[in-house]
Length: 321
Image (tube, rainbow, N blue to C red; front, side, top):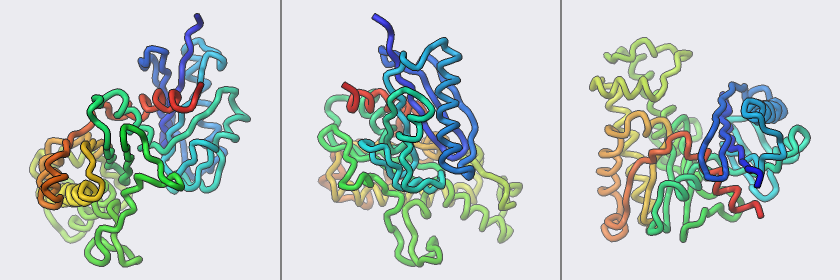
């Protein structure tokens, strides 16, 4: 019997990570290419097709060897029609990427929100049968979530479920923007942590991160983690504040939904889980009701970037015959 594969693709604003996965659910090849979201949807489609074709070429495979391309998109997507409703980080709105890719490759295309896809990978490859109701939260440039009820991904009535980054956590105050309200993402993402650190640097606060005072100088999660390990007061203060905010929001969600498991991932958590998790758990316990809170297990995923890639396997199982 001829081996059949899937190609899982994690689409980001600056890079496309693709993986070739065999019938034993093992990643046998990876490929990362750069892309520029500002060039528009058609450029991204061409980049995805290029990534898939290059991956196949490097592994001496034809398109008919691939059961599906399983694509994770950072935005609101309809997995049944292939329509991207809104993906602001990619500058895409109301665009059917499934139809567009069909003009470039002959392989069936399945799409899903990127954190939902990562959640599918975590549920299938990292969780036990006792996990039924789970929240997955990825903290990075932004904050995204995925919800599972009775072991199944909950997409919501209009495919918007899990978008916890847009929850209002502070109607008006220190972190608020011109809209007079601060979202979870504006309060606790890496973007939020970096913003507050740079404000501190502008005010002359001492920090090992002083070279990042320039607005153009990017401050990544690993650099933040190094500063926290050095007990830098500025980095520790705002990373700690973000952790507290995360714990509070997770506590409120748990009180509402009575979930049994919370899994954390993303660049911020991956880079400094030893610092973030204890503070998240402390804030969580302070904000959740005792009965549902005592039932929850909180931990970080060990799959890292592979979570979304493995999620392609679960997505293919759901949508392919």
